[in-house]
Length: 376
Length: 151
Ligand SMILES: [Zn+2]
Image (cartoon, rainbow over all chains, first blue to last red; front, top):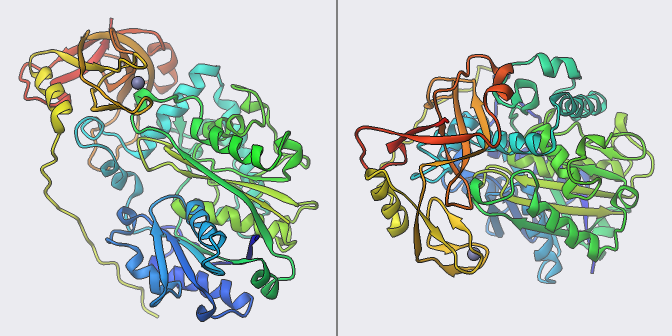
């Protein structure tokens, strides 16, 4: 039995300059209502609700107490994950695959109620890493530094990735930041944490994304051409930075192997039309290419986004960084491309897409990686 | 429509975190200028800080070893932005493989000129030898080591 995505919905997205901010659960309501209205579905038609929100950033425990009803889950089967939202989709998918349920709403919402870097200091253990002033950015910077050193990567190569992602964003009507950032803009920007410069670091925006997924027969009732979830996988690495590989994303590599083996993907570059990857920094994007076997180890810089290898048509995290909701945003972007509803940035032949989700705040850095493979 | 409210808030919750027997022994050691690690007899890794189990072999660890206060710098970063609640920049952090350990250990790097970010790759180098500089007054904290300085 297949499970497919039948609708997506977005709230408006906000940054700190916009005063009329809504609460994260109001945005969850708006995004979900739009996704359901699009296909004429009511909350009564939905069996299961899965959200992704992180209490620390919502500033409330348990943050899904509010989103539960905002997504339509009043007196229904509802649950939350404090991971990147691709995992919420994966959990919902498994519930439907179990045969116990037919329709699920998946939602994730990001607030701007707190400074994310500041809040992220509390993620770390109180004995060793917290007294050493760690935050999620320093975790990412340590990985970037390790990767740069291992493979002698010049920062211009990282800057090119920012340029390519933001060029895609300039064509995507749904990207929050549409301004193209050039290599020289990146290199001229200040170091925040060496080796990361200001314009290599995505800035968090607030907003919400919802998906509606359903089992095969129900899916076809609401959408002539559902986008099927072909496979999913995820792996978690260890916590301590000092006892895991920093210049290679082992957890993602394992997830890719699992998906490629199951779906007979011999040459991912050829067999997959779209890639949506979590560019938490451009150095990570290079590491992601390598873990997904798009190129050899240390050669991530060779991958160029073009018509035959489409990477981050959405514009990437650097343009629309909804923190844990970023994964769902990317799934929704791939859905729109594959449904021929992307608008300005619509590409031809979008039959199969790989979306990578990245819970980069859980653990010292990049502990959990997930993959969702979509096909028509 | 008037501008929606923003209500200020802050969490101030007191914790007394149990450090557990492994981190406790490690922190006790730091008071005496000793750095304890723990060895996995299955994969031979030596972990600093020590921990109860090897995550790879999934066995309990009991083989305590003392590692040196000297080591090799493996990876480093330099913070140039003032973050709320964190030290004034610039400051550097490094992952250091202490002599006698197989896994690396995070700590501050000191006595290095961080004033010019573009010079960092010349000033800090992978493979550089470093040594712990201890605080005079030690109370059983990771900060009993002030920082590591290049040798
Ligand atoms: Zn072991």
